Figure 1 (cartoon, rainbow, N blue to C red):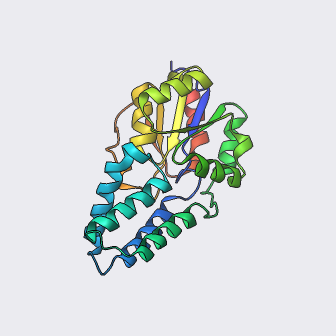
Figure 2: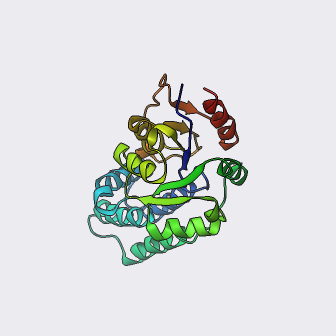
Figure 3: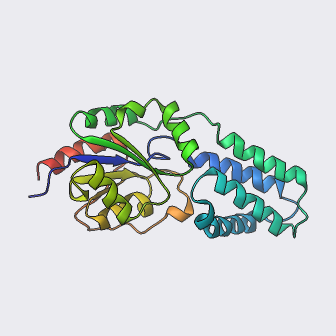
Length: 235
C-alpha cells in the first residue's frame, strides 16, 4: 500500500501564473534591436548558448536573462553594439520585473481544496525579489504553509525540503510544468512527480518524460490535481 500523501509542492512560473510569454516577448524585442547585426535564428541560438553558459554565474531568472542578452549583443556585433541598444535591453528587463500577475486556470480553487487536508508548499527557482513580488501580487501567499525559492531543483533539494516541511519525499508530490525541474528530480528523490504542460516552456527545461514510472503522472491542467490526490490516497 502506498504511503499517504501529506505534502504537496507547486512550482510557480507557468504552473500557477504566466511567465515564459514575457521572456518570449522580450526576446522578440532583442531580435528587433539587433536585426542589422544577425539573423533571428542565429541570434536565438547564440542567446540560448549564453543563457546556458551563464546559469552557474547568475542562476535562473530575469536578471541573468538580461545579462545574457547584453553579452550576446556584444558578441554578435563584435563589440560595436550602440549604448542605446544596451539601454533598451536593460529597460526591457525592468519591464519584465514589473509585469502584472496573470493566474493560470483553476489555481486558487485547486490550492484551496488541497490546503484543507495537506501541507502546501511553493517551490520555485528564480530571482528572490522577483519571485517574492509575484507571490505577493498573486494573492496566493496565505494559502501556502511554506515558500522555498531555490537556486536549482535537484533530488537532494527536494529531499531536504520535504523532510523539513513534511514526512519526506515518499509522502510528497510536486506539481509543475517542467519535466527537468519539477518532475524527474522529485521522482528520483522518491516522491510523486506530476507534469502539467504549458504551451511555452524554456528549451533548457525540456526533458524526456519518465513514462511507465509508477510515480509519474501527466495532467491536462490543475483541475485534475485534486482527483489525482484522492486516487493516490485510496491506493
